[in-house]
Amino acid sequence: MEAGSAQVLQLVSSGEFSKLLPVCEELELTIQEELAEVPTPDQASQLGFLYSVHLLACLLDDQLNAARFLWKRIPDAVQQHAQVALAHGVLEARWQCKFPEFFRQLTSGPWDASLQPLLAQVVARSREQLLDKIGNAYKAISADRVAALLGLDAAAARQAFGQRGWPRDPPGGDAPPPPERAQG
Image 1 (spheres, rainbow, N blue to C red):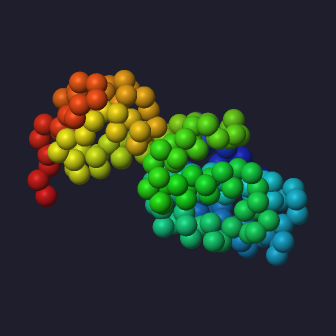
Image 2 (spheres, rainbow, N blue to C red; image 1 turned 120 degrees about the vertical axis):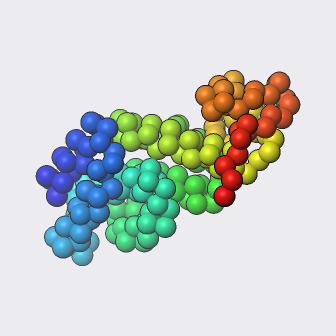
């Protein structure tokens, strides 16, 4: 488990997020084979870090069902770990489409410093995915509404509009998201 923890920490700190989920899944299998019925407090602490990374990696890859089932497999003692409980709160907010709460918890929770690169990537990728969905769902939406959904201020939402080539709305007005919507 020590080697697995070091590998996960290395992947997070180096930003190799594409490798994170498969490593976490393999590590979980190893843990299940090696772990006693009830983990010791030291094991629970170490497992707390690993499972919080695993939950966040599922969110990063937009695998909500995998994250929900992972939560059910996490030992009760580990579910009480502060970082795991935070990650579960983030998962719940995302699952329930409470996007402002989802982004608030990701950006302002008392997260361990070693998780910051992963959290930043979850935030960035989730915002991009949500912007894609907004672009496909709306003919017009205000920057203020998008800002509220994304946990941003209106100026940052307008900047996101500009980066996507969407017309910028006047303050308080609606603007059509994409100039051309994909036909499906």
